[in-house]
Image (cartoon, rainbow, N blue to C red; front, side, top):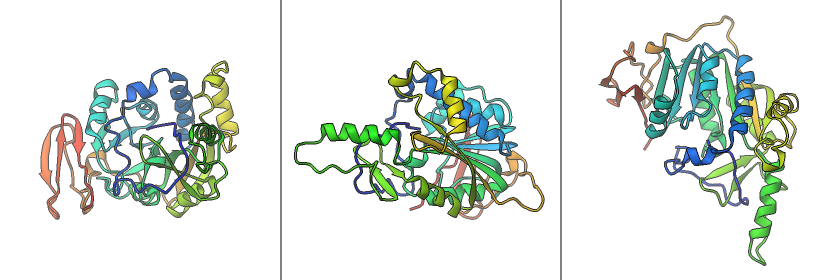
Length: 322
């Protein structure tokens, strides 16, 4: 999702209930135009992270229009792409060649239409900062993973080189007499990024790691990116940033941190069930049994009557709790 956040810390935004920020007005083409270096570096880091995790079935949460989907798809045996916006998934479907054993799902990250232990790993790239309740989202991801499953999560923490730049910009732009509230030097575990095009927060590295652990994950490694996404570093080859991000990723200078984590493994490995038997009601979590995911259908949950349908290659199962 969105990479750069500019602004000063204020009150923590509540977002829109349990939904991540609403990106309907976001123009991905404009946002990522001219930033091929960043996509290349992040793709290399993501691929490295995924290769250390079980990849029989990987679910990407918050696909957007699919900037990193081809990277995940190349590594994954089976691919599930989830986003809350149908339009993003339609563009991903039309532009990317995901191939067989792939599924696109319109769903709410907090209510995934997946049975327990449906995937072997998950990717949450450039989404965490825009979640109103990251801990709840991580618990839902944990539920959908097999024991020993993996998670690659990116987040813009504070302090970092980016927060220093943002603080400097805010200091120059603020009216005379207005107090300066710094993200870089704030002692708060989570600060709001304000003003921002979308509600966003930035945790400290310590608070981020504790949130991930409390959701049931063990952090194995941290990579770093973001230095390549600056006009001041364009003379540096992208490969240098990939190497630095792999070897020095935990350093606070990196604006974007990529956590590689795992759930507690079981005594014996159990693969997830076939993809066609891995779909459940997002409201009550009752499994739908065996579904024909290659053809259109419309059905209701036998328990709560929630409607789910397969339409033009996209499973539509977006539920928002009242």
